[in-house]
Image (cartoon, rainbow, N blue to C red):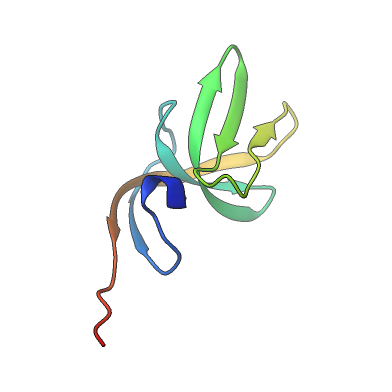
Length: 82
């Protein structure tokens, strides 16, 4: 999610909720694996889109198991001092 300012090592604050709107950044369980992606719903299709060009979107089919764990509401970065 580096393209929206979420860097490796950052802490995300997630509001637990079972639903989200298109465009929200969510934590979702897909086939037993947790992921942080932007939820995209359009024309009857559901995708979990990465905000990192190094990854591909997850296009969900009718048989895919997905559950929304929550919506990302904040990001915290630990300051590093030298």
